[in-house]
Length: 365
Length: 86
Ligand code: SF4
Image (cartoon, rainbow over all chains, first blue to last red; front, side, top):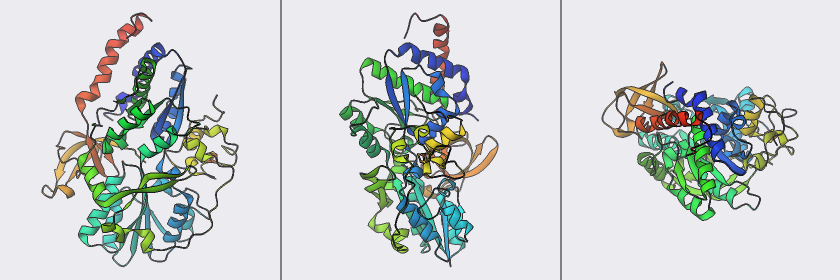
C-alpha cells in the first residue's frame, strides 16, 4: 500500500538507526504517546535497532485502556436495557468491567454491535425508529470529529432515538500530567501523528517550552518512528526543546480547521478520570448544553454499582510509562488476551497486548 | 484506535452540501465510501488519511518523499564510515 510499504523498508530503517547511533552520546528516555506507535515498535523490533543509550517507554495513548471501569460498567448497564442497540468500536468489547464486559453482556442476550464508523450507528437509528441506538464514543482528538459529526447529523435529521455515551480524552493534559509527576524520567516525547492531524501542534509548543522537553510529532510506521527518535535525540544532544513535525505528509501546525470546528460546536472540555491514573483536569470532552439531549448517560440513568478491578493489574503504571508490561506479576500468566485482567491486554493499542503478541515476555532491562 | 489508513480518492459523490460530501476511496484494491466533510479540497487522484470513515488529511506527496531522498544521500556517507557525521 502506497504511503505505508515504503515506510516499512528495512534498509531505510537501518540507515536511520545508524544515524541515531552516530548522534547519541549519553542515555535518553523517550516516550511514545500513542499505543499504535507502541505496537509498531514491538512488532518491528525497533528497540533492537536502537543503541543501548535510548530507552523507549510507552505512554497513555490508548483511549480504550484509560476508559474508567465505571464507564465500562455504565456501558454494560445501558446495553442490557431491553430495546437498546448498543454500538461500539470492536476494541471496547472485551475490556473487563466490574461484573462483565460488553462481549459477555452480548453473550447473555444484549444487542451489542460492532460498527466501523459512528455514522453506521446513526444509520442504525434511522433504520430502527422504535429502538434506542447508543454509540460508545471512545477516543482521542482523532476520533472526536467523527463522533461530533454523528451527533450533528442526528440533530439535523431530528433523530430522537440516537445518543452517545461519551468517553473522550485529550492528549496534551495527559502529557502535562506525566511531566509534572516527580517520578517522571521522560526527556523527550513522540507526539501522536493522527491526533495532531486533527488538533495541530500549537498546544504542544507551550508544553515543550514550559517543561524544557523536545516533542516530535511522529507517524506510525517504522521509518516514521525511527526518524522521530532521530529528531528527538538530535534536539536532546544539542540542548534544544522544541516541537518538530516528523509526520509532515499528514500534519499541519494548525491541524484540520473543519474538524476542529465541528468538535467545538458539539463538545466542550471537561475534567476526566483516566483508568489507573486518576482525574486529570480538562482532559476530556462532554456534550455542550445544546446537544445534551444526545447524552446517553442522562437519557439512561443507571445506578452506580460498586466498582471492582483486579488488584494485580498495574495498568496505571504501565500507561504512565513507569512500568513495562512484563514487570506485572499477572502478565502472560493470569492475564492473557483470552482472560484479560486489564484493558491494555485486550485493546489493539494496549501495551500489554503488544508485548504479549510480539513475544516480548521477558522483563525489559 | 487512532489508526488512519492512506487510500486513493477514486471519485467524488454527491457534490453540493459540503458536510455530506463523500468519495469512493481505494485501499490497495478495497473500495469504501469515505466522508470528505473535513477535507473539502480532496480531489480524485489524491491520497487521504482515513479514520473511522472520515478523511482527516490529504497526503502531502512532496513531503512524503523527503526522508527517502535524505536517506539516499546519507546512505553513501554512512557506508563510508563514521567520519563526516552530519
Ligand atoms: S498484564 Fe494484564 S494485569 Fe498486568 S498491567 Fe497489563 S492488563 Fe493489567
